[in-house]
Image 1 (cartoon, one colour):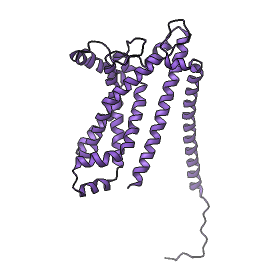
Image 2 (spheres, helix red, strand yellow; image 1 turned 45 degrees about the vertical axis):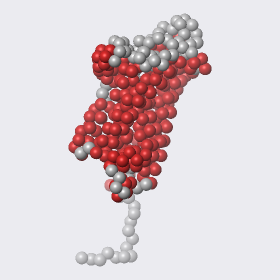
Image 3 (cartoon, rainbow, N blue to C red; image 1 turned 90 degrees about the horizontal axis):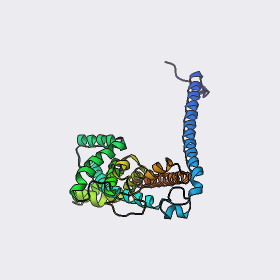
Length: 306
């Protein structure tokens, strides 16, 4: 065996194989940048197209007045804004506690195999067609449950909110599971060392620490539910033209207004459909960006506590 000469120069020049790897790496990086640019450009074109077609219909009256009659100019989507707010509030009322409790059970109490099965079925529910959820809620609530409690065989905000809550549930639960997994175990162990029971530890230590992530998941779920149309076609589509805050009545919503106005022969209603679409897109974008910011802030906070 010959010893290496310490004075020998080591060449750092790339060989043929190294040059090929570098070229492939740069090609892959270029393709990734191109794909990202195409995605951002598609989003920009979509937003600008909707905005340019509906901007002239946006005014103060658009947000404060009800629909105009056929052939008249003006009018607004105030009943749809109020209906969407009520539907989302009802859906959040159902989905938030159920999603958080499900996530707590899976993350803190459930055996590993049970937790894996629950995660699987939550993912399946998240990918379920929303129109199937609408048909299910129509058959369950409008035909069976609501008449029993005295609401009757008709569409209502309760039924629409319940349908949207099924869509929100897996999003809230999975987001809460992710943020609970980021809570440092040292916090739990310190609580156990003081003699605190497990459920009290979860309630007083784990949940307050993960609150930012829970709000993030809820915000994303609200943004998803606010844009759903198919479940509302079966549960909350036959409504009047006035602002109605009674959840036992069927109410208007922004997605349904877009659906109905876009098929109208009235040019004024077509413009309002584009304007309502832009309002909905703006709400989803703002909600998603806010949720992203809150999630990153919560993750940095939890990572700093490890």
